[in-house]
Image 1 (cartoon, rainbow, N blue to C red):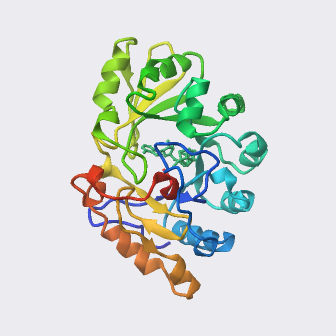
Image 2 (cartoon, rainbow, N blue to C red):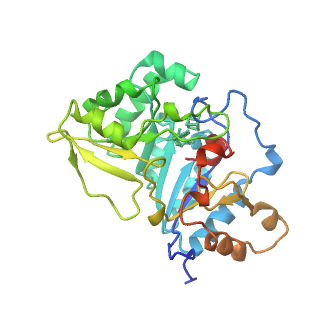
Length: 321
Ligand code: SAM
Ligand code: SF4
């Protein structure tokens, strides 16, 4: 067994989030600019390269792998990647916009991918089109139902933006009255091209206050590496949570490493530094010492950036949330 991947603050990194693909079948305004600059195909990992890198991380103690993107289900070799990972000793999960779930449900079940986060920012059909610049609301709703009926562990990610969908906070919670899923409200984060501004960001404190005006809420216990603060409305089947990346970060317990579709790694979502592992493996070099050094140098919080809103970062679609 190799040494675990630790940083100089003693945080063990055993959770790999892999962005399988930059491309997406939606165009969410908070995530990507209208016309993104896609990376040329030859600069992206082939199936074999991606599997090689993922295997290396697993050999270094990664025990949880989340597949994300872009939209992971748009990747043509998704089945090959999933079947490969299903043979490893890792807990698998995925973040998806939910549009292509129906045609993948058996594949997911057969290969033990049971934890699925679906992004859905509104319960109003017309608003879905406004936010995502595409159609598909009914399909996503149907697919969420399907996942719940098939006993997947479903979380619905909602990025809350003032003036866009903040009036739906309590409607989302009402939705969990009889539905066994967790709705997670995410504070809007700044990335290139998403027109973030302070005013549009609704904080955890404000969300809680506004929810409490309609519902009695109960705090639940959170897990050790949890990015979400969990709550329940007594009597409701589902739960809700708030991800406060902006106002109350959770960097102290961070165990995440991000592998991008171009074979680079980021030691923090907000880090502007990326380390290219693809070139190393194409030259036949061993990336392990480089990976260890990148993790070792991780900053204590938010990649050491004092004001993350003022600095450039890739758009989220190319990082993988
Ligand atoms: N396409 C998949 C999806 O939408 O779930 C996976 C990729 S998406 C980049 C991953 C997550 O990042 C989504 O839950 C999305 O809501 C979140 N996200 C994207 N841009 C964000 C932003 N500016 N602030 C907060 N969360 C964001
Ligand atoms: Fe695509 Fe997900 Fe970004 Fe929306 S949030 S544009 S679905 S990657």
